[in-house]
Image 1 (cartoon, rainbow, N blue to C red):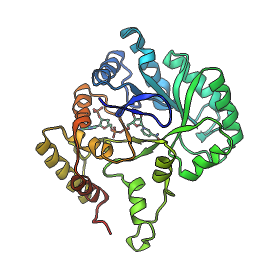
Image 2 (spheres, helix red, strand yellow):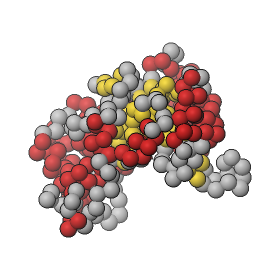
Image 3 (cartoon, rainbow, N blue to C red):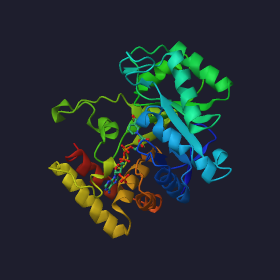
Image 4 (cartoon, helix red, strand yellow):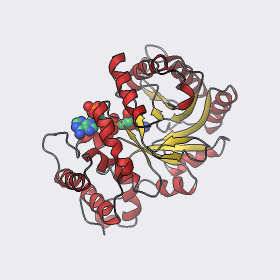
Length: 316
Ligand SMILES: NC(=O)c1ccc[n+]([C@@H]2O[C@H](COP(=O)([O-])OP(=O)(O)OC[C@H]3O[C@@H](n4cnc5c(N)ncnc54)[C@H](OP(=O)(O)O)[C@@H]3O)[C@@H](O)[C@H]2O)c1
């Protein structure tokens, strides 16, 4: 697995990462998933405090007993900023929360569950409408000084929201994790349909892709496998664009002698922004098959054909 630099950090990360949102509660199965990723030379693991109400972080910690000396060889990322109902007290509703107290408390929880002294990367999960950048800065400074978090980033943020944080946050924001896959192309498509209301699509991403490229903020793609719907998972009444994309994915996979999932991920890797796909499969065989993407080179023609199929129409 080829490595890449995460943002402007010195961290050398695998260009495909394992998302741990769906990690099994069973220690045996979770360890098998993590081992399958390590076997592919994946060294980057994505978590969030809210996934499975903390279970995936907890079960992930089993790997420290299974593989000795591993902690310093892997990059652990977690997220905070979404509170579930019942947290911090039983009457509390679900809320976005970038308050100092919530950020610090969330990190303490992740460290405890992951049985580690530090997170390599902490992301703010979803924009909080009531964000106070000064408060985020105070939390980040404290966590950084205490050695509890090495680097910081965001998820689901626009360029303007990142810039707002940067007015106060001294640490560089090194990653922005966004939903992106061959059938969820908005981040890329927005730059193509700019100024074309006649296409019925208004640009909503505010140049976020370009902003991240210019400022060396790694775009991480979540749901990078499109949950399997164009690489073999059957769904009821698929849209025509999904069927067309799945057919093209299948043809390219056959031509190149790789799995369909590898084609789906290769589409992201082909983009010059050095996008890091976060794959959420927990199936060891599928992890290996998907990682074949590391050796797939899609031509410009192939990339655009998949883009057109996935977006559901020819380019203007
Ligand atoms: N920042 C955010 O807001 C955010 C939101 C959601 C997720 N994430 C992150 O992104 C990661 C990936 O997200 P994701 O899991 O939603 O997306 P994904 O990687 O697109 O999909 C993984 C799911 O699709 C299934 N799948 C994939 N290929 C398949 C196939 N050919 N046939 C049948 N099933 C197939 C997997 O099942 P198997 O396990 O059986 O293979 C798994 O349930 C998460 O783990 C998390 O770390 C971030």
